[in-house]
Image (tube, rainbow over all chains, first blue to last red; front, side, top):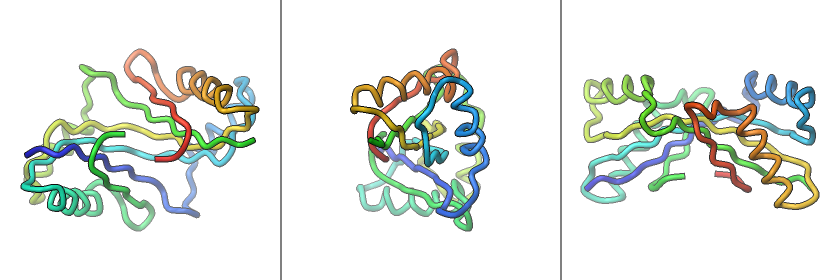
Length: 83
Length: 83
């Protein structure tokens, strides 16, 4: 069976996020005030063939940690389903 | 009050996603089979000062469409809360 998987990769707390800093700095000049604590992230959505949910999650977690994220600076949240 | 906002930007259906195609092609060689329909996306999480939820969502949606995504090829899902 195919299980829908959502992997959300975010920078760990304390790791600089220059893209977010640039956006946050640019917003007031574009007419948007009141934005704070902006952080960026990446998502990977896919379908994973597996015999059951537990094994789908286990393999997706291994993929997320080995291939889809850099565990030194990023953490990966893996879940069944879509956003 | 500050409202937590999550913006998820994804490529519209039919728009090529070369990063996803590359990952999907590389996975079998790395020992992960059974992955299909892989799509990438971006997230922006922030706090937005607003008087109520409705106005927070309205301003976040305007930001998402005008600044955080390219509406020609991307769609933006805006919601209150975190992932």
